[in-house]
Length: 205
Image 1 (cartoon, rainbow, N blue to C red):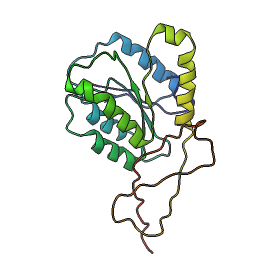
Image 2: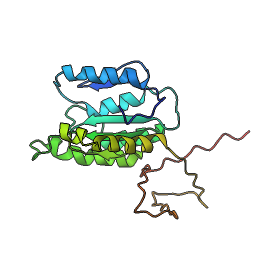
Image 3: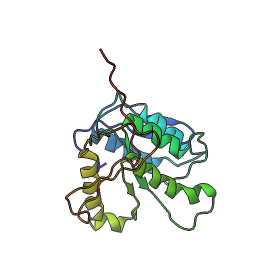
Image 4: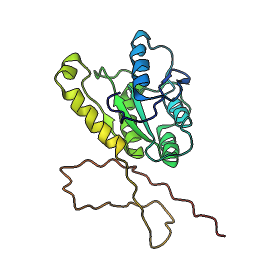
């Protein structure tokens, strides 16, 4: 919760086969709800992609800088949607996904466990978010590294930007675009959607 920008409206969602979402509130209310989750045990099938898609529908209208923080091991055992279809829907809504991939990270046993981390990286990259895979331990938290990581995520989530692209002619097929900047690429990490959705032309009067 420290990674959530202050002043943000936050809703907490949990899911197994179906998503359950709280009302919108402030960061401190959400923190209390998160702490209560430690008393719950995970159970049942996991409809990961369907639940994230349903969570995106809870945003009121389309607001610049809408973000989903997704805490998961990446396994999906119950969704009908694919990660590609989910990413496309989120792109159209302008929602970025920051994935907190949790372990343990021993040798995966099921197909879902093997494919999960790769799918989560694709989801984060396609929507312009970040994949955060870090050692969840008391030592890691007490060392101060957790606080540093939280600040990094907070800056990325609270500093969105818009990039206007004007093409000389309409594209008839998918094409690759390259973003060039005068900034030293070794000093910065830029999170942006890896697939751009075309804007609809305004109706002519």
